[in-house]
Image (cartoon, rainbow, N blue to C red; front, side, top):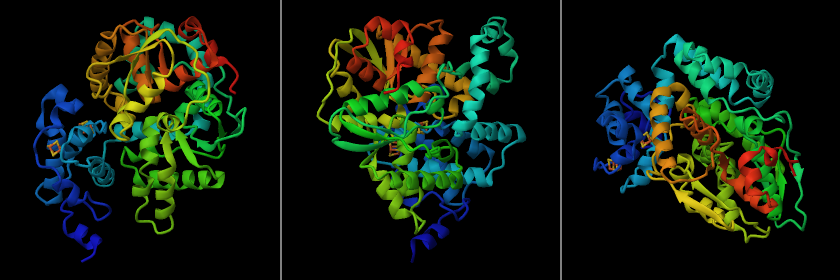
Length: 455
Ligand code: SF4
Ligand code: SF4
């Protein structure tokens, strides 16, 4: 009996396209070790909002004993996709292989209301489209620099916005003055190149965190890499894959693979944890496509988070002292989904005088979780506040992470406490500052390092 016929027989309430596989469902032995790791269970203590409860609901639906209805969707929508349950599970349950097909099943089979559909459409029409984000960046820059934002916030007018638009406004990053600049398509190291690497530009990252991309490229070049940044690259599809838009994600994955195949690089380096975990899954996403399955697996095998990659290289560039106490925040899609935990700490510990603080409850999500903080701002703010409490307890002067979504969520959480001045950096920015000998005060109190020439 073929695999697909087996799936057909056991799909229950799910449709025939990639129903969640029984083998993954049956790996769960209901021990409950994952419960304290799950942010929604920690907040609400509700079994159906725990990993064990969600897997039980998926099993019931797969056995044809429960429908795919709004209640089912609610508990699956409540899942942040943080994958902390995978790290905590002693039985090796691959929860990601369950929640992703289930989300796609929900999008196909459980209709959403008009408002919800429109809001999601707005997100998917803008966030993964850097060219549209660039068009939006100019009015946003005017909104922020003219004082209108300050006025609307101080007068409380932003509180009159609908809940989700209010969340969107509150999470807006400061638009960099040079948001329109793009990195060159190729950057050469000063000495002979020891590696030829491709670099992901990202979508939100290349417009609102262009300084992080510039720092990443500088660090890679300083460590002896020829850096290729193909201008044709588009969105990696992470937001779509994590939201159940499987076909859309697959189409973007194929474009990404083709672009980096043409670039002929040894490794594809990624500085955004959510994108990295998705690109490492392309092999699974395109497993049924005879034309792409093998290419996707080969591509995924080349993908590495920037910290993971740099740890494989013998350090070449000098690290100058940076007298700073910095708390390192683990992005869920790095520590749980990719298992990259020690490498960022190892890299930061190469910086003389840098004191790295560990944040209590480090495995708990900050509430960012892709677009979760836009869709469920109340829950995201609860988690964000808890993270900020834990962060402040370290006495750190700054916080570092490896994911733009986490940085936005942390900055938002700090602003809500009136702590606008606590800087939040991408881990690679600190490495870059150390390599360039940026003084501590410049790093903490000005944007100069961010406005410096790209390479
Ligand atoms: S992915 Fe995160 S939120 Fe979802 S069940 Fe697992 S631990 Fe809970
Ligand atoms: S997912 Fe893992 S840890 Fe959680 S109940 Fe199942 S077997 Fe236990």
